[in-house]
Length: 431
Image (tube, rainbow, N blue to C red; front, side, top):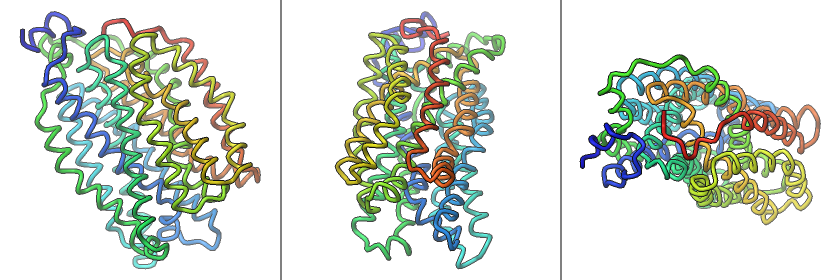
């Protein structure tokens, strides 16, 4: 029986084991790796970017400016979620994902080629912000589009596993970005890294583009999407409740993600006694733990359900954030930072493993890309994109390096209440 025939009978069939589906999963995963490598490099090199684009006599002011530009990229994410999400629902997941990959690569290479403030004055930070806005627009459509793409290709008894590969690929992109930045920082002298070496990770994003474009252009759209198109289904009523749940569900997810995996190299350099190279390697090791643990948690969620793992994650962030940060600051060395980042990585993986499937399963197929992208991106824009900025500001305002933990704990409390309202969807068919 052909894949098309299977899906006309049952979009959720567990018989999806074809080479075509594996190829589609590879397309979703590889493209997301490229997207988030491009997007995350900025955060890892924020201290250098601050020097070149936001010169100031005060290091904290310069760093706040750099993280504000980082956060502005997230402002464009809801717009990208709406526009590219609609494109994915109207023209197909594949069309939307090819567009997001192209936009991300072009804007990332653009950052790597930008003249600095010393060369062109105020035009430099303006152009940097433009590139960040394009990155944000692309990322806004990428997450929801790739999640819908992967989950809709998954057999019904493996949606947790397949969906977790999308989130593992996000962490994988961050891992590669952190690893590349660490390798470049290890090879070059500090002066060389600060002068021109910081451009290398951005320019490498352009090299990754051709393969990602080739893979995504040569896959079929999802069987679930094709089935809906063939049946010419009219959109169901607007899933406002599901959108609200997705928004609240994402708050801790995004805050923990950008505090623990993007801001942490800056934090460990400034407050935990690590050198720039040690901070990048510590972050890279923590990301390895995340990438390994996420698919395991996704697979476990196919058996025990999504909610038990997600609740364990939100409660652990509520209870352990303060003591773990305190431990890292008390020891102030590379080993302590690695241990803490691995523990945080496992906590995050317990959410990120089942998370993509859980959020995709509450939306209908004919509106999944638009609504999921919009709700997720809006939450990320408000709570996650400015997380490094908020963390830096909280420390500056309170004088305590432990201040960011309260932001994590508040986010965990909100997401806990939302997760309790979700129905268990692990063993249900996609709508």
